[in-house]
Amino acid sequence: MSTATTSTEETSRRDFLYISTGAVAAVGAVSVVWPLISQMSPDASTLALASTEVDLTSIPVGQIVTVKWRGKPVFIRRRTPEEIKAAQDVDVSSLRDPQADSTRVQKPEWLIVVGICTHLGCIPLGKQGDYDGWFCPCHGSVYDTSGRIRKGPAPRNLDVPPYAFLTDTKVKIG
Image (cartoon, rainbow, N blue to C red; front, side, top):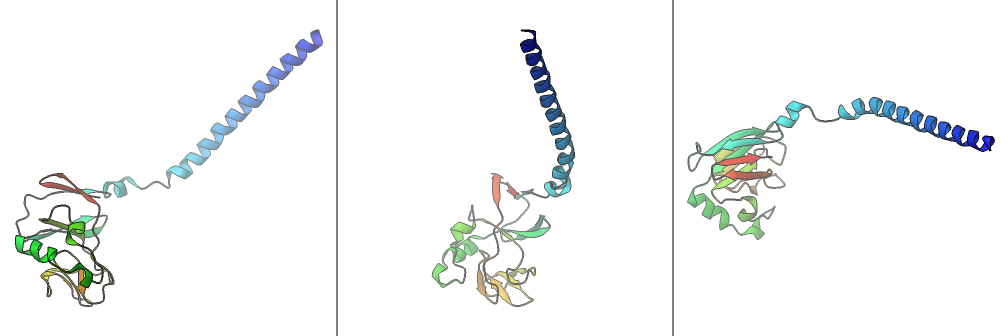
């Protein structure tokens, strides 16, 4: 019987050594791999640019304000009732990139678009062009008061960034 007892004790010691060796190896592997994985995460300054909050109270009706989000200009336009009506009355089927004004805005008074021409990445000028929207002087793209392409070589409308109204007077972009 003493042989059976010795064999069981050796087995349990061997099992303990295997488990403790495996645990030490796993901890060692994690301690080597963790810094490699964590260095792939975005920098804190990049995360800070992920969103921006804008107070809308200082923007008068009819004005366009440019803010920076992720290193890109974003146009915030407080549209007049006439600009809203003109944007809503457009026959969407006649547009190159058909989008209704209601799908581009959350509140009709506020239009928020990325201020980069979709042709070659220029910065369009506000309140210019045939439709009183934006005009890109580099190649002649013309956008309306909803940021939709109306003339010129640009293939699509100005992009609408993800945004949400935090209050009636504050918007968070990103």
